[in-house]
Image 1 (cartoon, helix red, strand yellow):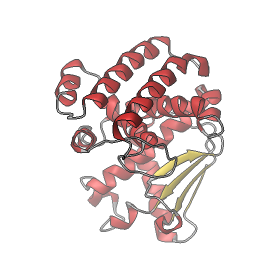
Image 2 (cartoon, rainbow, N blue to C red):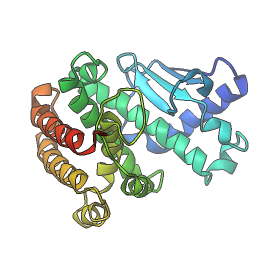
Image 3 (spheres, one colour):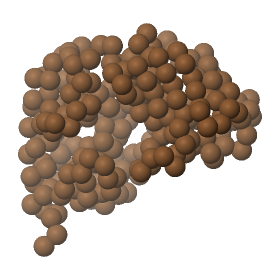
Image 4 (cartoon, helix red, strand yellow):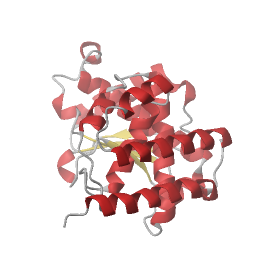
Length: 250
């Protein structure tokens, strides 16, 4: 595995230490047999804010410099309690989780990486993000409830679909965030607490439907067949139409 930062050698040295740190502590459930490259790229090269992604058929992890640029130094011993550093490690572990799952679910990842058929891509992407984030929540690198607070405080009016924007009117982005939100609230008591705080009752009903479907899908694991996600798509499609009717500006 190569670990590179082509624009800053000091950052490259630090990146290698972050990879080692992550693997030393959290490698038990990871399978990185197909991973060939981890590369850190300057955030200025990206149009939208992001911290990392797994790509190229599960052989590469791309990380952005956004969080790295916020660090006070590159000394891990001094950074272990730093929130930005913890987020860096969490991002590393999350993307390594995708590489691991790529070994087990190559057909679903192929579909998730393509935008040619949104009926297949959307549920595949949602499911794979849910699985990777569930793994990250279980190791608890970060306070897992921060995202929950942000989610319930947002005013979601998702009446459109856009594959690149990150705003609360975007149904695609809503589902991306839900795939991070739901792994944190699957305990029944926690579920009730957060769902009761959502003012958008249509969104609450959508989440309840998704939770029921996820519970059924988890009983079927492991599977690498998009047909297993047909009902997940039907739920998404049903509620997208409802959101669109309710929130499209007139």
